[in-house]
Image (cartoon, rainbow, N blue to C red; front, side, top):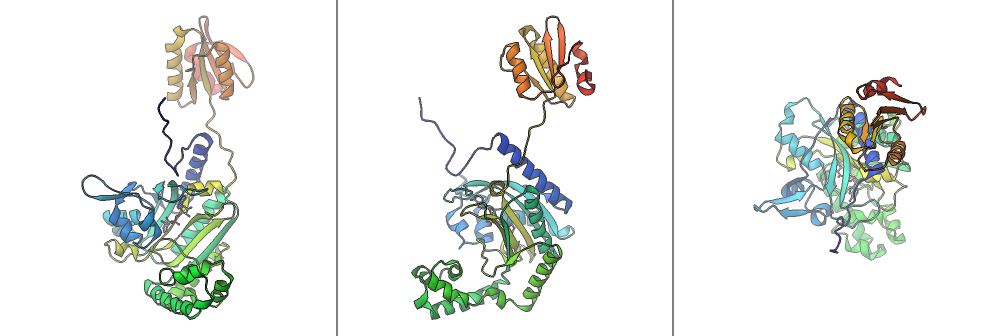
Length: 413
Ligand code: HAM
């Protein structure tokens, strides 16, 4: 026996009930997003590596450690997409969508790839549902976008949800704030944990997440980016909050909210669920007003989010999902009737009925048992003496012409 090959680490197969649950999540998302004017976009699963290096940011974990990048054999570096925003903005530019009425609203659902350490809720191939609204910096775009994700999660029944919200302002504000925070941390260096001390240059914001009591005391009076926003950004954020209040959406302003991707400006947000373990992020996003320039376009504002399909399902109660009911099961005992049975099942399906043909070589008794297991409403039994049609709900059985079976499925015996 040769060694069995298994699915790669951090990947999984989607089977049976899980496939139905994913389908139902997709239908719910589509309904909510399309009612709000979003249209579906599909982009390739691989793109030029440069798109993510420039779009997502060279210094992010995603770009530095997690991308599946390879030479495609022709000397071009290709990357399996780790996220969807850079590809969607690339498509916006490539198809001249700035000529359409703005904002252009696009939604997607598909596979994404990150070479992370697999654990509960964290995979190397996962699915995201996402929505991007490109071409307007109106704060109502931000509020509407966040509200739509909230509605999807609510419709699916995601539990233990918390919504955190903040604003990052402009890259300039952020750079000045970073200098200020670094100076503050250096002033209090002797009270900080070693870990935080060593990262003052690299990632001063990490200090806000520290468990170390001394560090926490220092951080309690640390300057906050939210207090440094310029007047325009502060007003933009105030309007986003006011609109979310008007929609009765509950959120917490968290001035220490950081996102793992570089393109964010102004609004950022994240939904977490305490039904998940360490990987508690269900979905998140924000505004990316500088991204399109970064990838070679004119200045064009954008706002959007993505949510992990597996994480939504892990933090939602299992939905009663059922495959479509079987209307007709075609059984036969004598192989001579196989062609007739085959034709009947095919005709029934062509007429729009859910029909199954016996394919397992079972005895007639086994076939009837199998028909019962599939929950079939009617069983047609093709025999030497003609065709019998049985209504499994009432137990009634009648001899019928094979050609009238379809008529009976529609109207009863
Ligand atoms: P992100 O926060 O990196 O944002 O990912 C969004 C969601 O994808 C996460 O909240 C999580 O549910 C899911 N996710 C991420 N990595 C994994 C993984 N390894 N395994 C399972 N699920 C995962 C983005 O990707 C941005 N493109 C969102 C966005 C859209 N911002 C603006 N527009």
